[in-house]
Image (cartoon, rainbow, N blue to C red; front, side, top):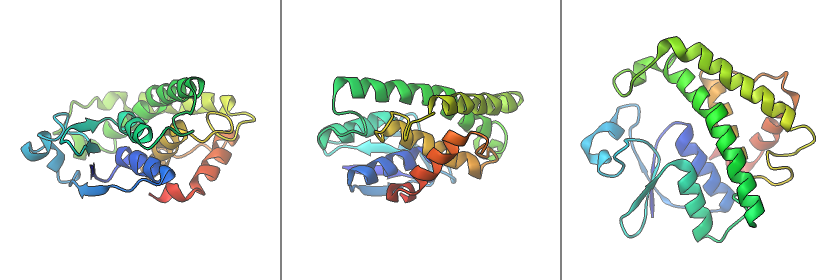
Length: 203
């Protein structure tokens, strides 16, 4: 298998997940900043023009980070990262969806529509007037999650999961693009430090 890799939070989610599982794959770097992901050669791999993408040994390609992570987890033998029981898997997917839609999408689009305009203006429709509201929505959801994290080590309690990987990578990205972590969210701040100390956080 081969992972089409690049800069940015989405590929890092998969790399961090792989590091947690001890999975090593061939990486093929794609020049995201130069727009190589929007050129015909890469669009044959992933018609959506997004990164990362996982090419299987049979030539088929899986994209979307949660799908890639779940596939890798399954072929390696299920783990606590996705869930070892139906209940754990449902819990992980519930939190992944909440985090993805409430925090990640708002944070990422807030960046694309503001600081990232120069990079994205020719790649997608931008809504600059929505940027501040999207950033605010992301912060409000982080604050809500902070309350849900009271007394918990990780998003799914004592079990480190894909939900933690997603949240950490995007909050880390936020600190790099003008959306700093609000340290008044004491539970999230403590959780962030715990995750940052994991070896996989450097993936």
